[in-house]
Length: 215
Figure 1 (cartoon, rainbow, N blue to C red):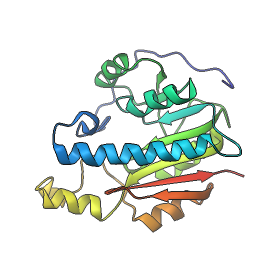
Figure 2 (tube, rainbow, N blue to C red):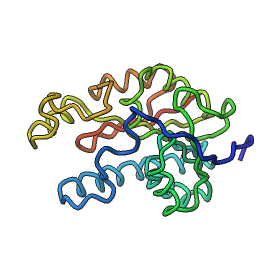
Figure 3 (tube, helix red, strand yellow):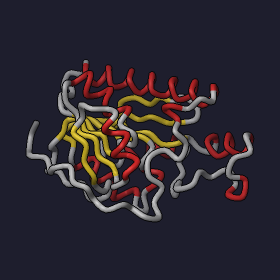
Figure 4 (cartoon, helix red, strand yellow):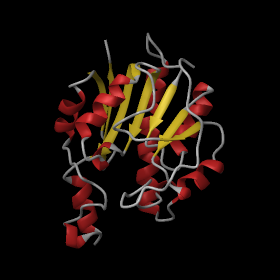
């Protein structure tokens, strides 16, 4: 792995910030949420497979916003290594202990503690919608990868509309707690194309996933 990694520390908590998934979608018992999440993970994993088979394949992945560590652990199984990073939270640390393999760290997506181009694949799933400055976050994601970006966000207006239809977050017009930014599928492609060339787009309902590469 290029560059050194900071140690995992018992960092202070992050008050006032929604950490991880507001709903435990990866372990949800609700059959609809479970089906949608499994479909999303399958599409994401399919794109990771394409990246692994690229002419400049990934061997050194980072997940920014690792949440409970589900995706980081999958990438560790595929590549034999993975760094997973998220904000300080005791609940996440507990989840990480149950999913060994990745090198887990605490850190801020808008100020990543890594060298330029330290990784060749940066995955960021369901994070950019939470950032106060998503443009700064996107620039940081692009800075620390030498090649591949794999990013996803809720696909609007379908994500909020689905919440409204199921009676969730009605007073906020279906907006999930912590979601500060909203993109349609075309708008997210344009957003990502500021820092890399879009290679593929998937839209497993109700998300948008973009794979992009740097020159």
